[in-house]
Length: 390
Image (tube, rainbow, N blue to C red; front, side, top):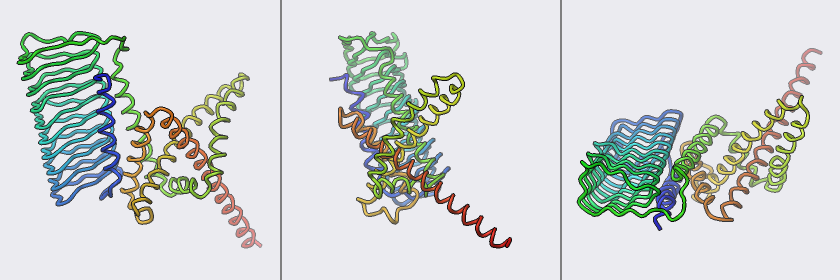
């Protein structure tokens, strides 16, 4: 059962984020900074989001780099490449990112997933603490135990309650104070410093099957990949909003065309590259083709995610009057939902393939339409110049 802790924690965190981020956004852009006082829930998305305001409500944010450093009376939900939580949060925190740092106080529960998760010495968590990631460093004070899964786990803080761990390596440092039992599953026995204070029993259960080195770190890699997809999707939408929305809408208006074009692009890309590789002269072109193909696959998948986001907005009745921030958050939610579904056997494969194929077709169709429109515009301009010259 404990071998499922990593997937369990991560799924709960991301499902909660996905459901919450579909709400309305107040601010979005390359850089968003909020100061002063906010007397309602605060939503934001951007390349960098800094919340330096006292918020009487929830804070829901997504971005490349996120900093929350003031009082929050409600929940904090954050997804980003780098998440830095310094705030005094009076309810729960749910966060996922490439790197997550917690240095403030949390009155409720903490659920965190990341490539690395670091709870600093000044942090205090009154509720339950559930974390997963590649590298976990636990300092500060945890008042209601700890459940963690990671590639490596280091404990240096004070924990009141039982500790359940699943990891490749664990270290209990001399500053650690654990007022409860430690139950640990992994390949190696924990390294416990003689200066550490442990009030309860320490039980170690070796894995019956071999665990590849840093296997739990793979979850951190997956999280980082999802965050990268989110950031790429948000940036592409902010740079080309009309083009992106047009491509997503093409899946509705020309579904069969999108399906056919998507299958053609998906199948023909590698074939063309392989044919170019046959000749020495074509090798550089083959490399360029493969690079373009990979970029197109990513863009196609994100187009499929954008379509799902637009579909969600339609269900909420906000598709026609949605703000830029709301559309950005719908992209974040769609990518998270697709990533979660991808773990389900068969259904995950089918859903991912469908999003990819329809997204590729819609993207290709939108490119064709834009090129045709530009061509007609150029032709009309030439006709006008000829008339003027004559």
